[in-house]
Image 1 (spheres, rainbow, N blue to C red):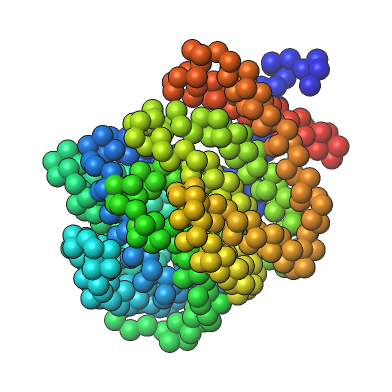
Image 2 (cartoon, rainbow, N blue to C red):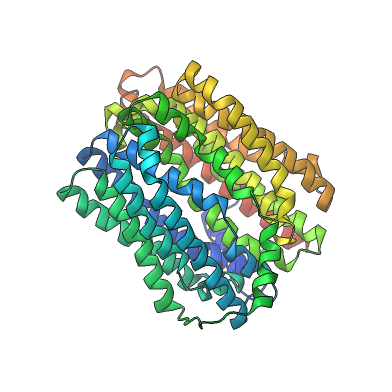
Length: 498
């Protein structure tokens, strides 16, 4: 970048942004969708972080531990009958037609009602298993959220298919923010786990209402059987995947809830949520933008691989500096955000960051399989991860405590990632060495975070919570600045060469 002036850098930034966002190309649609979803989700995630900072000072840790059990138990039943309505509509060429939308609505609502009834019935048994009678009422309340989520307008999914993400972002993010605001308000008045449970249901209600306001749909009393069968053919490829994914993602809660008190579980849960919440946001955003994009190029292996490589590099540029920051600043970060009691979750948070990076990168291979109409290709990966977590979770949690639970998850997701990398190589002829080289620049720029944090270590004034976090943020600013300059330079060379 020698000899480049600030004016030239500004011009390159403007030129790059304009070339990315302008026009009707697939890349432009993807990035415009990312702007909508990213902007809305950033506001929502900031609101959730603020909510958690307030609620951890209003509610006892056992409230968060108890709510984690409620959400996990509800997820078990949902995973048994996941039929992938949204994914089926997005992938199916006929997904915009009314008879497909009507069939999707009836399938989703029927599944939601059955799930709610099953959860209502088993709630006392779950409460007895964990020795917490309060779980019965909490689980039964959560059935309202399941029904409302299932009853949302299926026409909203057409917006994802057509890559028109403005209104969709309003439904998901504004609905989430409504739930956040109500939960905080309830926290000041109720001051126990019921504030969290009612807020969760309110979030589902807000999203359901917004889906009909922005995407009106009145399903008829009858449905098209052929359309339903067509959607179910895709869903058969998903059979068992959600349940196996649940074993991987929720096994820690089920095991730790038996080994430790709700208060200890609450400290752990809130700690790892610092990374799991933004990870869910990133994975949802990538899924909503890249699934329709990959579906449009599903028969072009070259373009599919090009997308995979670019996304992998972009994810690494964003996440590896953040991982370095968390490695050095996990304890002071938890202390500042939640309070000193939560610093016990520092090591689980670091390991959860590693899990998150593998998980997001692995998700891109899954999207390729889904876009090609072959979700079954993902099943063996999920089986591998579920088996490994099921075998490692209990002994590692007993031996290493909370860190052991995340170590079990990290081992499993690393194995699943490597398996899907090989499978993607066979499916699209992805060059594995070229894929691995996409991590070189992100790893290099992340060293700036490591260097700055190490230099600050000998100074006692800089190891206190707030200065320590500020030093880490400075390191991230340098890393992301180097990344941006490298990307701009590369894009400029490509345009000059073409």
